[in-house]
Image (cartoon, rainbow, N blue to C red; front, side, top):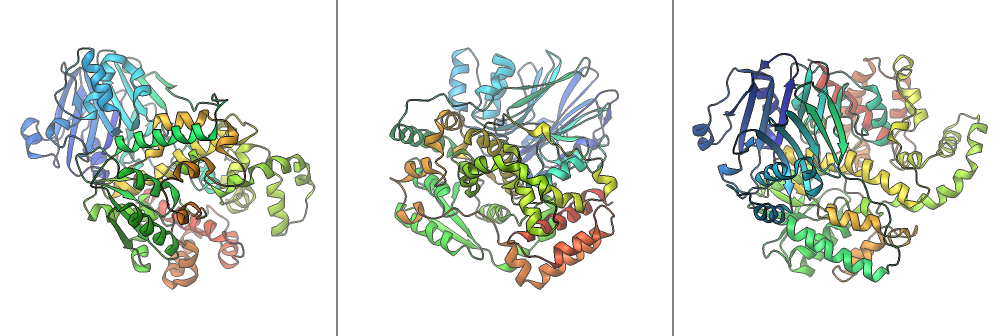
Length: 632
């Protein structure tokens, strides 16, 4: 739901052109309404915008040229309380606390009852007003109470502070730029780049992690001085002296349940997932379930029928996805729920390819199938889509986790690495394998991306010499078992990668993805379970499979794990226009003198390994990213 923008200029008031252009840059996130709040010389005022509803325009003047020190902008995608009472920025009754909020709070009805018992009254049925009243009652302790996805900005004129906060696992993005001139923030980097205080510059440290992990590790981005607010954090800016502090309001729990059986765990997971689905189905607009044909999304669809008589499901079909589509159709018939199949042919997959790649604000290693999924949902008037994302991270779903125990054994032989002097490709792969000293390194290797030695050969020495290669700031607890790996999956695979991609894909078409597997209670409970129940090193998602057994057909339970993505390698090999597209962009990239042209040519002309195309696509998307955000 929605998108937020804002700035706080520390030393001088700046033109409202900034917030107007920032808001316009993310219009796709909220076409239903927009609003502004401006603050200068101790006074605040609300404004409508050109895209505001008629009733809002009658209530507030349309923002024109006006200077201010603080400005809040908002784009609305109406999901809950479709009336103007859900308009933002929302102000407290005394107009001293102002909020903009992007997301959905699934336990807002429970919180509302609690607040009403404490004497609060409400004017709307929106979850935004619940957060506002909760903050008035509990202050920054509110964030830990929220079950859902959120990026929030609160201006508290009473305490003279401005607060930015983000949900537990980063389902909703929030980026910020901080300099001596001020603080600028927004739901997408596109918005920040419209502010006069922000200049687009490459952050090579961010690019380095992007090449190694297929995504940029938060809090870094690929833009200099633009950061991602880390999940489960809130940042406070003192309006009196501009001092900034950041605090965590939640941490991933460690194992606490010890004497528990598989049966007890399965039963409790079934209950918690049902509770999460029932809450996330709530909306004042049509809701659909996106089924990939695998266990995760199919289980959500099967359980949804108990809570809604009008569950709609759909599946995106693309080349080589026949088995997944068959299983999705089989499951829908088994449950007796409506199911549609949207076939994406080669032409559709390549349609708007450049624009879609550039919509993502960093280089990427694939075609994003979820853009097609969001486009279809939008065309079918589904504003809310339930997704199975998060289950792989929470329940050990990725195939590379099955290599963990072998790696824990083999790393005892890492002393072999420095003894390998031969330069052939096989030797270099072996050397890379025996360079994985930490759980962080094992996680990196599992992402099927560029290896550190390859990045070194690619980037020109002048740039490479300035990159922080150690990445120690990204290391977590480094536990010597699955729990240690689990931390990396939850923080970097999920927060920095998957839900970030989901949000950009969905909101491009004004659609909201929701994630029943990522409720507070489910994450807390699964994290607390003993390792032998959650992970066995033999089968992926052993615990979730047991929970799904009584709901799903056997064919789906036995289906091997497959990624929900387009077969890029197929397009590269079989579509001449894709090869021409790649060649054109690689030639352009070589002229920029960022990378070694000979290495680019070698990677393009000699693709031997199954995933060699990944490196090529990362370079192509780097070039398109550079064209979009740095060339005027």
